[in-house]
Amino acid sequence: MAKFKLDEIDHQILDMLIDNTRVPFTDIAKKLLISAGTVHVRVKKIEDAGIIKGSSLTLDYKKLGYSFIAYIGVYLNNTSQTKFVLERINELPFVTVAHITTGKFNIFCKIRARNTAHAKDVIFMIDDIEGVYRTETMISLEESINDKKRLMHYIFKEL
Amino acid sequence: MAKFKLDEIDHQILDMLIDNTRVPFTDIAKKLLISAGTVHVRVKKIEDAGIIKGSSLTLDYKKLGYSFIAYIGVYLNNTSQTKFVLERINELPFVTVAHITTGKFNIFCKIRARNTAHAKDVIFMIDDIEGVYRTETMISLEESINDKKRLMHYIFKEL
DNA sequence: GGTGAAACTTCTAATAA
DNA sequence: TTATTAGAAGTTTCACC
Image (tube, rainbow over all chains, first blue to last red; front, side):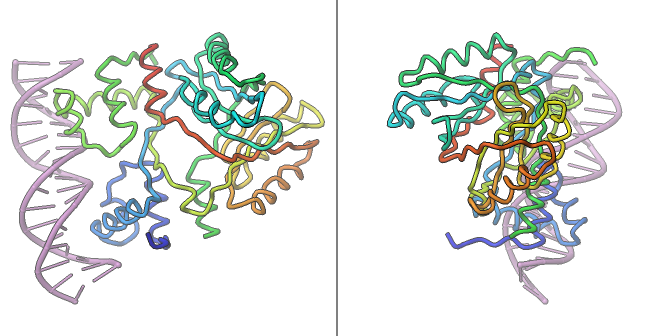
């Protein structure tokens, strides 16, 4: 696949779609003074280039009763087990993302749970994985998210 | 706002929308053997309840040249500065999320950058914030994400 | 590349059950 | 609450720039 270059119009299309994927192409067209057909073709191209991988809902997990977030640093007995343990961790429910990292931890993951009791269950499941030496938990007391729109704004400026 | 309870139909609607927000309501209706009007009414209700906060594109940051991810643990001179420093960190470009945490760090954040040189710039900006004593960087060598669909599956089972 | 219009599909709100 | 319906709106293709 040839390297795909986004132009200013593409940036603006992404900018509109990124915080509302259901915004009509006709609205985008009107705002950017191009035709809806053009919007359609460009979005398709960006999708085909693999830059847009999909779309997803932003849900309020607090309202669903899952307001507990923690990061778990994992120490292993032996670094050679890293890949194996990462896979086991990733199979666990309520683990949202896991990383192999440099630094003090071998593996680092984020969990989302109902409350501390529920999180304890998840953490114990991690502790029980073969090869895990010990874990260290950091509970999030307050989360402050930067929306993708802002990140993309910086990325577009640098591209 | 009264407590909103999602039923099995709602779960399945969310399940379909969560990995493609643009799936036509008519398709959802066909699959669930209900009318498109019903899908429309239910989605609106879930939105009005605040459970669906919005929608967003899933982008391939690697393809955009931003493949570097790191977590930064921040130690402060004084815990009373936590809120202030969190706000400063959150204003920085390429910081995607920041948390106030229990455990060894006072603040913990995630950054996304082009490469190590670029990440260094971001980390130095954090180090320069008034009240930051020192930072500790964990570079992600491999990221393994669990999609929201799977998380929602577990949440629905427990609800 | 882009447009504009036609053909087709989907949305949405009102009404009815 | 859900279904039906019908007009409005959006999408997608294509002949032509």
